[in-house]
Length: 351
Ligand code: ADP
Ligand code: MG
Image (cartoon, rainbow, N blue to C red; front, side, top):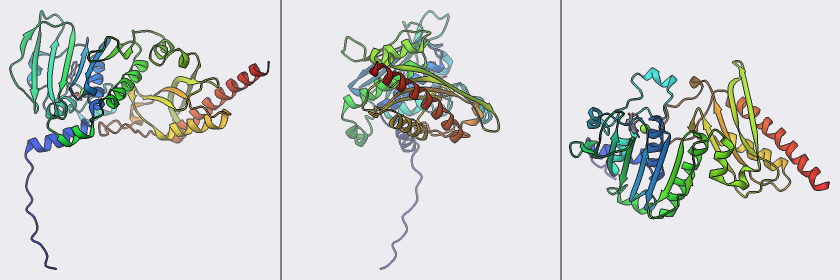
């Protein structure tokens, strides 16, 4: 067969490039929620409230009481790669904020309609402005505002027909959003969170700031979970093996569940670590006769240079320096706690 003429190579237009990239950063409504809530946390908010309509496709509204955004920054707020959190690449080593790449808000404006209302300290009124494709649609208009920032993301994926179609099941994404807020709420116990479906009178997550982690877990996951938890701690401070500090809560031998709940934060970032998850599941399966699945909350703190945070925003899976050693240490702490809890239970049953 005769070889075909090679097709011509063309440069994609900027708006096509931006929309494709945005669709990767914001894969579904819950990815937008995560970015917005992380921004609110980065702005030192003490109260973060969500309103969600139609699983987030119609509306995601996040209101916080953080430091707000300056009027003079509003014109570039939603451009790609504009951020208040990073200036030199080297800063990535020590970055404390959850955002840093200045991509989230921009991405949302390429696949949704974004409206920002914000007020900074000492101002008499706030400003409201809408964005599309990275740019302001109008000059910021003065408006009444309470402390902080409110961001509305409307009609998500209005310009991505296929994505909208695959996301029809609105209740599915709403439960992902509730699950996400639940996780943030038990990590950031000094912040109050709420998440409500549009039209509902009751919030599905509602926490008040507290100093007790167990209280936070109780108000999010319920009494039956909280009363069956044990505190766990582990650490190592040996540069030759591993350096880390871990604390958390694990379910005891009386807790019964068909599915595992694992909430993992590493250096305050919500992440997944399937190797650690597997290690924990193995311990529970081997120790408990009925093989009940655990509830487990773990927060690990490592030297920042031992975790690479410069990953794609949607890649939640992390790998750590000396991961095997850290996992083994955590696994053995969990195993011994679970064994002693199981022995107590067996003893109680016999008595
Ligand atoms: P990043 O978080 O990576 O900096 P984003 O696109 O998420 O990028 O946000 C861009 C900038 O907008 C942030 O650096 C921050 O200065 C500002 N910002 C976004 N959301 C808020 C908020 N809720 N409160 C205050 N400032 C915000
Ligand atoms: Mg951000």
